[in-house]
Length: 118
Image (cartoon, one colour):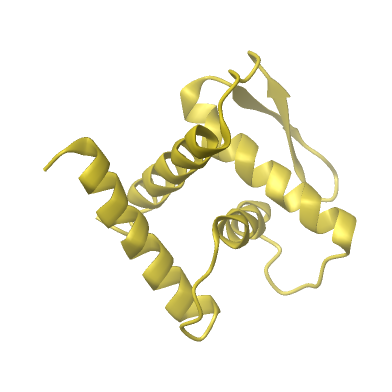
């Protein structure tokens, strides 16, 4: 199976499993999945978040997802349990479609690593 087809198949599996678990079967989009990863990484599942905190959660997720690519590394966790990342190298300029593919690949790899999918 080609790499693109395998990524597409795995991405669809991630979307299906997360949508069934968190959205009563409604299809979650990329941003919603990034948000869920941020909540998971923070580990404070039983609370509500303000709008700015939701953006921070998405930032945590993006840093976590792109760390294996060498763009970020965990710097420290603050007294409230929020992880802070430092940028190791600038992100390359990518067109919107290329950004989407990179994030989907990073999300699939995250869920392979956590054994949510195989």
